[in-house]
Length: 100
Image (tube, rainbow, N blue to C red; front, side):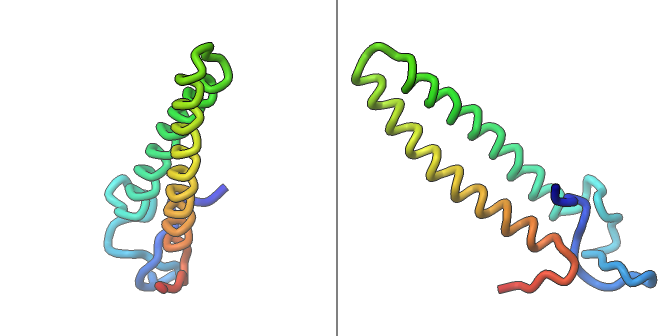
């Protein structure tokens, strides 16, 4: 599991790095807020995806099943993009992360 409290930035006296004067992991940490928002978006999207899958599997109307399958495919693509954003945000939060 990734440590959401890790940030990057200037060095502290003990050798650790911080982004600014705020404590790492504090609610004011912008990188932590970004990760938490992305993970909340992911959780909501996964619920929508589960509902679309259930509709695809259990609806009786063929048109509704096709619509649910299309929605499921679109949500999977959207979830893939979101997961890429989460991985990028997690990488940026690691000490010594390079900016590309």
